[in-house]
Length: 308
Image (cartoon, rainbow, N blue to C red; front, side):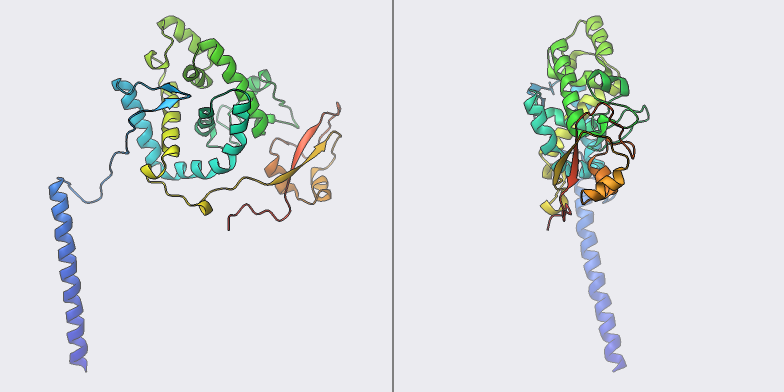
């Protein structure tokens, strides 16, 4: 009996050894064919034959344009975790942003500006730029957003998108094209206008700008390319992987609120969900001396946001 077991063990080891040697031989043949030094290789991300922003074509035949886009496509393709969450969040937030852009006559591609700015999150930068569109306080107020101790509409996706539209439309009038309008969102209209005048160029791709602004526009192009052709860049997400749009009702408030937590319970929700859906409410109270109307989102009872 022991001899039989020993023979079986030796036979099994032999089979595994043969399989290993065979596999190694195949791998070595492939490695030799492509002159690989090892079998753990990284390949360049696909490069598109054409890209455009808001219908304005990028001149990929220019070597610097080609190389700048190539850099951003590879950086964003191989920063897989970041791109993965861009795609997940887009399912929830693009349906909110897209109709506002359309209503204001701003090209749909500007939704990718929000992705590049914040990753579709209400984030705060080191320079204290806030929200999906990363408004500084002064710029927010210039674009009709309320920013005070109790209310900060930079955190309101709908209102901040409206404000961003106002900026883009004015920039389009100033610079004459959407690509420069997008670039000015990063560089500022005054600084960009100074470079346009000094260099006597009105095409973004013919200007020599700071590296941050150059990367900014090409990052937007790369994000658009990858998100529009996800599987070509190795991103395979099913419906269950995506973040569903939030489902809620609206309650109008035109009075003061002395305790948002108590108010939330009166409306069959809780403070956590109230603040998650209305992050622009910055305090636990609302003075509202001028009786302004505020639209408060209330999560639909029983809503989980998880696709079955």
